[in-house]
Length: 127
Image 1 (tube, rainbow, N blue to C red):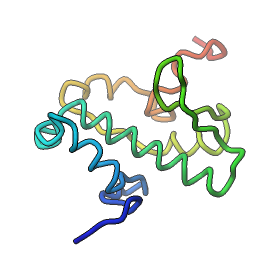
Image 2 (image 1 turned 180 degrees about the vertical axis):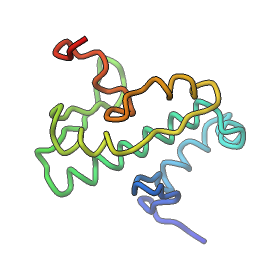
Image 3 (image 1 turned 180 degrees about the horizontal axis):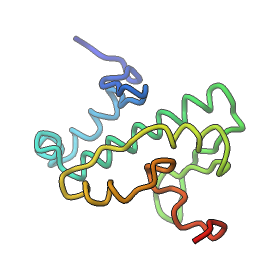
């Protein structure tokens, strides 16, 4: 079966996914196939980042003002900005990241309303 660039490959129950191109990009790394086969932390993190990127992109197609995705030259990475209590933050709060065995203990310590830990260290939170 052939896939087009943006075709979803693996869809999660929450609707998030990784595309054919995103997986191919990872597999093209020197160690990509091995990291994928062993479900390494590196691949799991990449997989979840793709899910988030695709979710935000989908929301932005419906509402261009919901978020900004841009190349951040300071950290040489794609960055996202969105309101703390807008459409994107609400959507992110409904999905759960995947964890490897080493991260399961950390997973249990995350707040159910903020499974990605995005809001844990904000100064306006009550301690």
